[in-house]
Amino acid sequence: MRIDEFRFIPVVVIKEIEDALPTLKALCEGGLPCAEITFRTACAEEAICLGRMELPDMCIGAGTVINGEQCERAIAAGAEFIVSPGLSEEVAAVCKEKGVHYFPGCVTPTEIMKAISLGLTDLKFFPAGVYGGLKALKALSAPFPQVRFIPTGGVDMNNIDEFLAFDRIKAIGGSFIMKGDIAENTKKLMEKLK
Image (cartoon, rainbow, N blue to C red; front, side):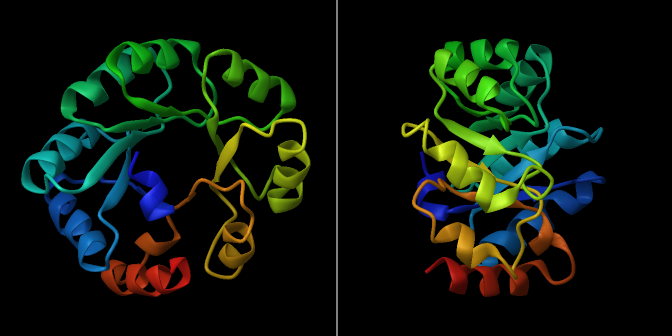
């Protein structure tokens, strides 16, 4: 999975379909050909499809996928990975059947154990800032050595270095680079990811 190469998953909200390609191209221009397009807008499905057609080398997934029906649609549109705010067994089953990576949101030991029982060990930790941030991740990592985390929410340019320094972080998710000049913000982020 190419997420390991990128180490950052931009969380992208596309409200109007005409914004899709300029937004995705700005991420590529900044050096990060990856996007998690949130599945909570009317044009999300179309944006994923358009991005995969026009930018075939870009790694595009769907975020905020909360049920099996959405998951089926996202994968049909071309999503290469699926992200949920929580853990959905329905979504996990669809992803397993289709051979697509699934990153469910898990913040408690019980949720993590459930994810492991489903064969999932790369987990979104959301909202990271609310659920104890890096301190919580370090505590949760001890009993679950097989798990790697994707903290999202509460990570930004001010604290990203300390998260990246922790070896149990698969990648970091966030929308903070999507405000203002996306290409320029992405370039600055890529400097930190080196």
